[in-house]
Amino acid sequence: MSTHINDDAYFAKTVLMPGDPLRAKYIAEHFLKDYKEVTNTRGILGYTGKTMEGKEISVMASGMGIPSIGIYSYELYAFYGVENIIRIGTCGGYQKECHVGDVIIATSASSSSNFAYQFDLQGGVLAPCSDFSLILKAYENAKKMNLKVHVGPIFSSDVFYDANKDYYKKFADLGILGVEMESYGLFLNAMRLHKKALCILTVSDTFVNKDEKDLTKEERQEKLNDMFKLALTMAD
Ligand code: HPA
Image 1 (cartoon, rainbow, N blue to C red):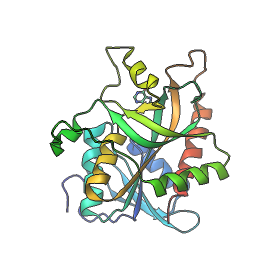
Image 2: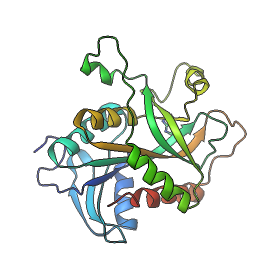
Image 3: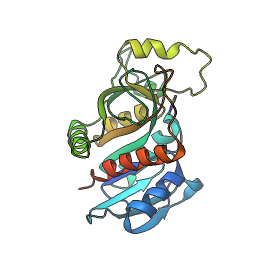
């Protein structure tokens, strides 16, 4: 059925998508029941199982960057009947109020990527957005869980080790909440294929709160677990 995912893989309607294959495995092992590994092509692990409430859900890694999530999200939507892909990851905070450990729900993704050139928009610029029904559900569930949550636009960078250390300021000044490296490709594929996408992030580092301490390993895992639990409430 596809070149990058096992042919016989079965996926639930909703797929959670961390970047790291071992994070997909961790989520399956710690938060799912009756789960099965459904794909492992190129070491990109995917699992389908049930939440503790008995709702079917899948979790599969995206790899890093827009080209990688561009391939996997396209194949899940186009060839495996997936309706909702929810990226879960970490981001660098661009705003003072976005502290390390906070959750960001992305409404749109701006980018330095040329992924949208394929649509030949004749000089026009498309704003890739997440799905409002998914945003609303995630926000309401985050509030119920007492998570510190911010909702707004993010930046999907093509560069992690940027030669221009001040590049982020242009986007921070325009109100972008934080930076990661995948959502732009995911949101564009969802719009192209008339499917739904969302991105939920934990702020793992900050560009602006210079004296803010990094989380300890334990605190980081605890914050990530909170985000995974939030993402799991998205299963229907
Ligand atoms: N840049 C890009 N992606 C990230 C970052 C960052 O600083 N932090 C977490 N994901």
